[in-house]
Length: 182
Image 1 (cartoon, one colour):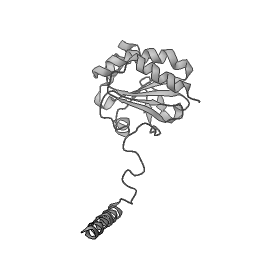
Image 2: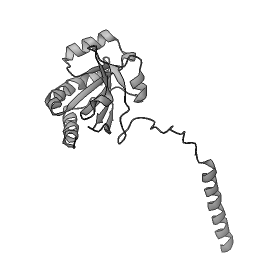
Image 3: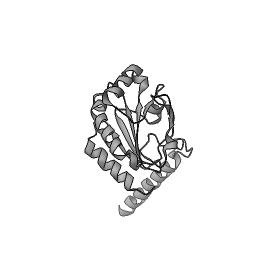
């Protein structure tokens, strides 16, 4: 009986290896060479968007800065709760090379509401308008707010889905990133 078990076990193992070999995806198209959603340890996908004040910002043009990329909407309760803390952290660290890029999900919002929100909260960091939802799709937005902490090299260091983020969390993450070599 012992030789039969050994033969059977080897047979099952060989069939398993054959199955793995035959069913492997060798096309390289599983993710088409890209990650399914931006995540920690990967380069932040580049984009260019208009700003609320009539300018334009390209993410790659911000290299060398520590960036908090925040996707938000004016009607989002957690977004409303975390914006004052984001403004205070921006004011405290912008001279050291930190910026906030607040990407409004304008495809899900109204421009007049965005303008009123920015005025009410006294926001001075760049407000980017994602009118066609391009950045929301690019960053696989599933929940508002969603924030990406990006190092000076353009790499995503942390993703925070949901909120509101506390001022302590914001300060800690920004200080860590500012300590990294430029």
